[in-house]
Amino acid sequence: MAGFFARLFGLGGGSSAAEEESVVHEGYTITSSPMSDGGQYRLHGTITKDFDGEAKSHTLIRADTFPVAEQCAEATIAKAKQVIAEQGDRIFD
Image (cartoon, rainbow, N blue to C red; front, top):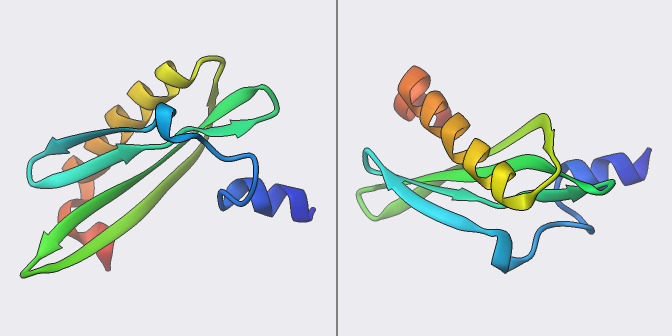
Protein backbone atom coordinates (compact mmCIF):
# COMPACT_ATOMS: atom_id res chain seq x y z
CA MET A 1 0.00 0.00 0.00
CA ALA A 2 2.85 2.42 0.77
CA GLY A 3 4.15 1.92 -2.77
CA PHE A 4 0.81 3.06 -4.15
CA PHE A 5 0.95 6.32 -2.19
CA ALA A 6 4.59 6.86 -3.11
CA ARG A 7 3.71 6.62 -6.79
CA LEU A 8 0.55 8.67 -6.36
CA PHE A 9 2.42 11.57 -4.76
CA GLY A 10 5.52 11.31 -6.94
CA LEU A 11 7.81 9.80 -4.33
CA GLY A 12 10.16 7.48 -6.12
CA GLY A 13 9.80 6.23 -9.65
CA GLY A 14 8.81 9.69 -10.80
CA SER A 15 9.54 11.48 -14.03
CA SER A 16 12.82 12.88 -15.24
CA ALA A 17 13.35 16.48 -16.26
CA ALA A 18 13.64 15.38 -19.89
CA GLU A 19 9.99 14.33 -19.82
CA GLU A 20 8.74 17.65 -18.43
CA GLU A 21 7.13 20.22 -20.70
CA SER A 22 5.78 23.66 -19.80
CA VAL A 23 3.37 25.93 -21.64
CA VAL A 24 1.67 29.20 -20.76
CA HIS A 25 -2.09 29.24 -21.28
CA GLU A 26 -4.32 32.22 -20.40
CA GLY A 27 -1.91 33.42 -17.69
CA TYR A 28 -1.40 29.95 -16.17
CA THR A 29 1.79 27.95 -16.48
CA ILE A 30 1.10 24.28 -17.10
CA THR A 31 3.96 21.87 -16.45
CA SER A 32 3.49 18.25 -17.38
CA SER A 33 5.63 15.73 -15.52
CA PRO A 34 4.49 12.21 -16.43
CA MET A 35 4.89 9.73 -13.58
CA SER A 36 6.45 6.38 -14.39
CA ASP A 37 4.00 3.69 -13.31
CA GLY A 38 4.55 0.03 -14.08
CA GLY A 39 5.98 0.56 -17.56
CA GLN A 40 3.40 3.23 -18.38
CA TYR A 41 3.17 6.95 -17.63
CA ARG A 42 0.46 8.40 -15.39
CA LEU A 43 -1.06 11.80 -16.20
CA HIS A 44 0.60 14.24 -13.77
CA GLY A 45 1.45 17.92 -13.78
CA THR A 46 1.04 21.29 -12.12
CA ILE A 47 -0.91 24.42 -12.91
CA THR A 48 0.69 27.60 -11.55
CA LYS A 49 -0.39 31.23 -11.57
CA ASP A 50 1.14 34.37 -10.08
CA PHE A 51 -1.11 36.50 -7.85
CA ASP A 52 0.54 39.82 -6.97
CA GLY A 53 3.98 38.25 -6.68
CA GLU A 54 2.77 35.08 -4.95
CA ALA A 55 2.82 31.92 -7.03
CA LYS A 56 0.04 29.45 -6.33
CA SER A 57 0.01 25.96 -7.78
CA HIS A 58 -2.38 23.06 -8.17
CA THR A 59 -1.21 19.48 -8.69
CA LEU A 60 -3.06 17.55 -11.36
CA ILE A 61 -3.00 13.74 -11.09
CA ARG A 62 -5.35 11.44 -12.97
CA ALA A 63 -5.68 7.68 -13.33
CA ASP A 64 -5.08 7.88 -17.09
CA THR A 65 -1.93 6.07 -18.23
CA PHE A 66 -0.06 6.15 -21.54
CA PRO A 67 2.63 3.92 -23.06
CA VAL A 68 4.82 6.88 -24.12
CA ALA A 69 5.89 9.87 -21.98
CA GLU A 70 5.31 12.34 -24.84
CA GLN A 71 1.69 11.20 -25.24
CA CYS A 72 1.20 11.57 -21.51
CA ALA A 73 2.68 15.09 -21.55
CA GLU A 74 0.32 16.14 -24.36
CA ALA A 75 -2.68 14.68 -22.52
CA THR A 76 -1.64 16.38 -19.28
CA ILE A 77 -1.53 19.77 -20.99
CA ALA A 78 -4.90 19.18 -22.65
CA LYS A 79 -6.49 18.10 -19.33
CA ALA A 80 -5.00 21.11 -17.52
CA LYS A 81 -6.46 23.46 -20.15
CA GLN A 82 -9.85 21.80 -19.60
CA VAL A 83 -9.58 22.24 -15.82
CA ILE A 84 -8.63 25.91 -16.29
CA ALA A 85 -11.61 26.47 -18.60
CA GLU A 86 -14.01 24.81 -16.15
CA GLN A 87 -12.70 26.12 -12.83
CA GLY A 88 -10.42 29.09 -13.45
CA ASP A 89 -8.79 30.49 -10.30
CA ARG A 90 -11.03 28.31 -8.08
CA ILE A 91 -8.52 25.47 -8.50
CA PHE A 92 -6.31 27.30 -5.99
CA ASP A 93 -8.97 27.48 -3.26
